[in-house]
Length: 271
Image (tube, rainbow, N blue to C red):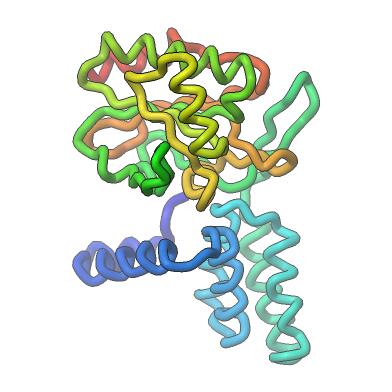
């Protein structure tokens, strides 16, 4: 999701100020138990209670990107009606509806043909890949920005307890032996303990297998959270050395594997 033009202009004019504000925001998110979606809904309510139109617009967009459903965004504001009054609440709702009217329709994937809805807004090819924090087998936080300077493949799977996810992870583990310049991160919402057992059982030792169970940080940043299951959709992303998205593949039928040849063909262009 791109930032508003005003924000981008301020960032270009005062880059050091904005970078410090962004760092403060990251620090605050890591210090609280709220996930990104919950935090944006709280900020939305605060902006609405203060009649800050720009703040309501901004946090409504951010809440959508973080995986909040339109109904949740409306409910976060209507709850204020007995605290701030009907007129202020009604004004905030009209600002929210401005944002919702311009929001794209949710993307759907399927499981054996049955539709499932993805929450959040996926970043586009050519955009800077959003940062996120996941957890390794030792429960240590791992930040994606730590890998900048290397080509990265982000490989998301619903659960390593399923056959297709196991095949997908094993295939990338085999491929990475040929790709010395590439870092491959397989991410799921499985607990780190389960991921560790899987890696030991199947000798997954060439790629990093990481869990998004704690913050849903990757899920929200890349718009991959399946609403009905609270699991990640199956996808593959290629991020270049400068941190820009060069390729994305969302597998629309959950029971199918990715198109590995298409991923490797795109990767060849960067090597």
